[in-house]
Image 1 (tube, rainbow, N blue to C red):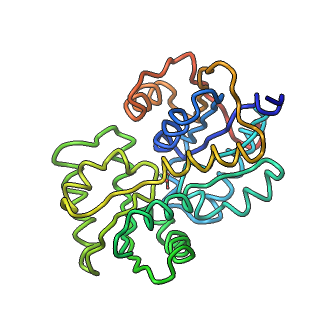
Image 2: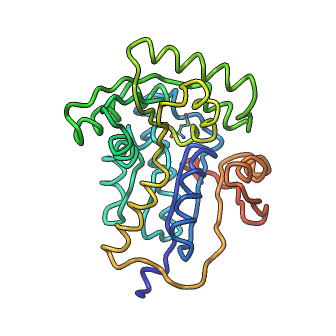
Length: 275
Ligand code: DGL
């Protein structure tokens, strides 16, 4: 194992939602050192302009680079959809992996008839990145999409079960289905897997739900393998960086991950340009 393989993988999201991707990477690559950055002070990204999201994502990934990461995973569909090429260029030669292409791949692999519905943030829907990624893989696929901004707030609140998320899911899903019934729904925001039970209930039993967490984790593994950067040392404890409310991250992040997060592993950082 090279010294470079010892370096951590940096993972970033606007908030806690990217922990769904973090959990999948941790499960698939238990020997890797992981640093997760949640830009909790500036969430949501999904309602903001491409310029603002690109600026925020550039600042957050730059902060991760201070930890000498060997790879950066953009565990946020919005930042991937709007800023991936800019981030790749800015961080070169450090490899950058986003979640949209893996999510699109999971969708086309799961969909029997290539009728795919995308649930995402406003910014991801507006940019059309999912439709492009799906069509690049299956040009004949029918893609419909809907923005579900309320899901982000519900997930950040840890309010993922019961009548409120179910009502929101029912409203979004039935609106999407007015344009035709997909056979597969892709959860095109890393916060949405937390609401999967409510979304599945609204969609009905015949519709498949997919997200990008597992396929992104697999892509991380393959890319590290190709680069000779897989770590095989003893499993290391993860480190978490947040831009606001660390105690909230410990509480809700632990729910997301399904395991408790030690408050000593969460550090508050400042991303303002002067910092
Ligand atoms: N988790 C982010 C995503 O995957 C969205 C949350 C937000 O709006 O900041 O798009």
